[in-house]
Image (cartoon, rainbow over all chains, first blue to last red; front, side, top):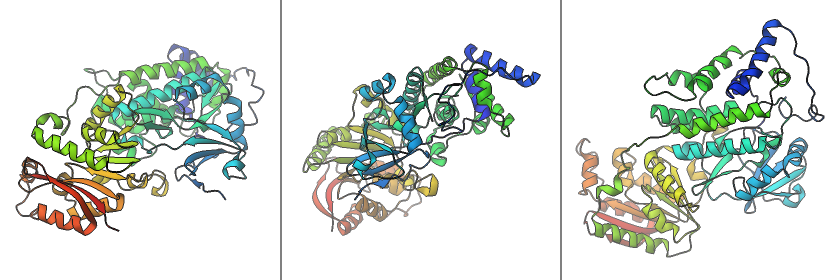
Length: 56
Length: 466
């Protein structure tokens, strides 16, 4: 009933960290990119990613 | 011509709406919503949840077949829930079980490439003591890099309320009733200090860090989703988060607490013969006609709810003491009882709806129509402790139910005298059997009545006057 939520940047980061070791690696890469200003290499995107997301 | 009407609480999801009518519930989907559902519906995790009853029975139908047209391109029918309840009417154990169901479904569907759009306890209902996920529209195909969209909502509406009660001993119900959006991370951080003596698992990450991160990134317009995807964010990371949250929720406990009335039935308030007579009276009254739904107001340990359940389809057992209700819930859960729904309801403070326009979550009186109501050992508490006049109580019962079983303690009843101990002399002089019968006879016709052998209480079975 409360769908279509904005995950929120802060909440998204904490949810990644909440995964413990599994999340710390992801978090670290994101923060490093933020500090150095170097864009991360783009990864592949699912074929049907673009058209129908209900979380824009 | 469709007999369906849109549910007043169904509007937050632009991709689907819930309609009620013709003895069933219909969830209709827009084109985008239908696409979400079509991609995931046949997946094993969804089918398993349907088979186990953790997800509500759902049948895909064409909107036209249920009387719906544009913009709905697909629809599902669901059985009616016997009585809709809300998280602020649940006890600690009920909210905890609902949280565990939410996390379990989120993990199991994640492994199947499915994401849940949200994580609100309003998507869970109880069939008796069994929690069931009712929002079949919550599922969608998970896209690469998708975070768990419901994480913040899970914290605000499940985790923090559980922490509040488990760690602080403060009831969460008034907070959830006060805001349909739950408790914010910042509010929770202020409420929940660190404790060296009793470590509060999950506080640092899910409360302190969460509040700090929300404040830090409040104005961010950065697309963190693509950053996360490029940094390797994947289902394994989310699964680890969900697994750890399951561990936290599992460990939050209520402890062994006693409340005002949690020892009520053990305190020997009634002499044995009075209790036997009262049980027989209630059994005869409830069994005198077929009953679809019975409300037991002031249910305590549920002894009369069980009698009613033996002669009706469904019983809503309400009490104003959350610890009493929690104990009843755990007993019913151990029995796998799906016929008695225990709820924390304080009738002196439960009438109004909450949320958008006060209609998003209607008040308790607007969610069901009992065939018969039992108000046993309850009206003196409302009259003397909360100063709700007897006439007003009887007006409420008259508006609520065609039949009523009601117990009136006399002015010389030990409990009445106890409640009056610290009251000003004379302010409850009208709390007498004679005055009660006069008011009762104005509104109801007495079918039967009995003076209990204690000599200080009379019980009535009455029918509403036309």
